[in-house]
Length: 184
Image (cartoon, rainbow, N blue to C red; front, top):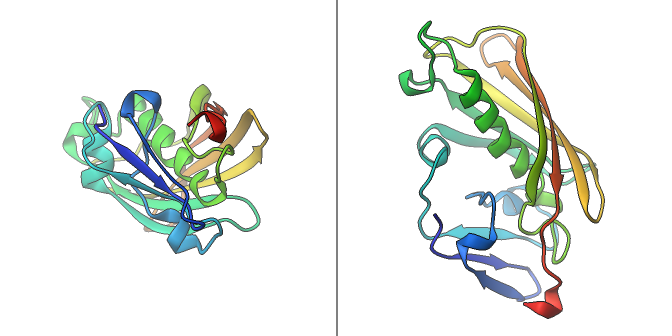
């Protein structure tokens, strides 16, 4: 549950929203790193819920860009709580990681009424190519393939940091839930 989120645009326009309006909140200042206009910052006061500790405690932003499409790269080191009985990244955890990371790629291209709230998942197709062992550090590269007014498609690739081997891939379809600015 999120208590409060404040979205701030470079032109000074800002909106405070109740967390119940948002499916996934991304605690990143991606737009500043990507140097895009308008700059969007999602400021999080408190996050709770499934997956939030994984994001907050174990993921780090490596890069973000709005050109040519929204892209982000995050690093993530696999912890014991992320693993199955074989000591590898659990498939459900990998799907959650992709849900979070691919959504961050929308932040650099977002603006009022265009993906400012990150949307909600419509589809999340994950393909597991190699096991990801406990203690392994991976890079999650996400890129917006297409972002229309209502629907978008984002691709994600999880690579082993030490040698670049592709471990897991995904395609994430989202639906925009932004209310019209005039209704806020």
